[in-house]
Length: 389
Ligand code: NAD
Image (tube, rainbow, N blue to C red; front, side, top):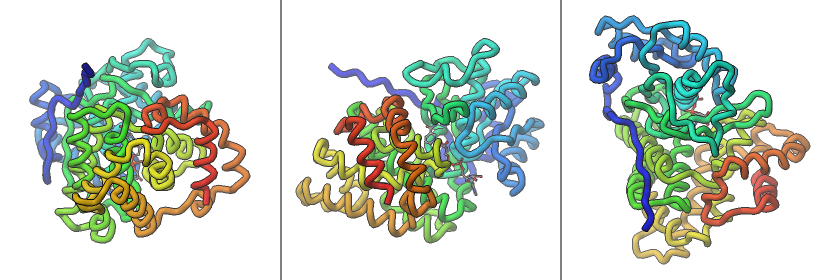
């Protein structure tokens, strides 16, 4: 008998205006002294007020740590921990995209460890189950699903490795999932984050660690994302598309958190770490080629994914549905203007020089081992060369 372990935040409030209930959610858990972790744009644009105003109204004057960076680093997490330990905080609020949310989660984990502990001590296969303070997440992109996952991703600045850190310590206590916060996300970031969630759902569904509960979330997420990503990209104020994307991203997060990601993510993290390509974009660069590589190892699953996304008909045979999926992933990249690594400006010699380390880091992350077709190091190198462009 196979037993699946399922985890999710203790409380989620989902819907337009959910962020206005942040003080109420804190009060539910007897919390009142949050440190809000966000990024500089949230402060300069005034967006952070969407979180601070309802707190203030409830008499809570929250301190803000806004020095987070895209793709959080160990040094930023350490700076955040110093602030966390200098005050009498009783919780963290991660407000923003995956980067601020992951920073908040990593701060909670690192702060629980003895002084001098380094973030790399928690990277998989280590288990990061302890957290100093509970984390409440409020996503402002429809992408990572980090608000509902047991993961945080932190870059080791010494080795330039994007480390996957997993455990209950990274699982938020609560999440406020409010699609109205995503209206301001520009098309490029809508595309990158949207393809990130599509990849989460697809990889969770074809993963060797798939299970019936995660399957239902992944299929639902693919239906929502398949029908709304293009609309959200072309029409940023389309409420129905934004709402579907936000719900889809969260469900995709729950799906892969309770199954796993696979080869796309394994190969994508090194591209992000070495060349500073946004996470969703590096996923998108890989998705069609890696899906083609994996297709026949889990054809019925890929075919069902194509039907959920809405590009294959129920009566299509699996082989045809699989072919339609590949066609759709290529068409999506074209419509959402996803460049190749070469088109992104990465020099051919630099790409080639770093490939061996990137392939080793991809394998060490453990994600490729969950792929329906487990690649050799040579095959990973060949895939990197193939997508370069
Ligand atoms: P991000 O958080 O880095 O944000 C990207 C950009 O979008 C930033 O400039 C930010 O200011 C801007 N932005 C965010 N919300 C906005 C809004 N409402 N309006 C306008 N601009 C807005 O990007 P992301 O893709 O959300 O997160 C990426 C990070 O998440 C990566 O480090 C990735 O590895 C990680 N990740 C984590 C998990 C997990 O489970 N923990 C899963 C997938 C990815």
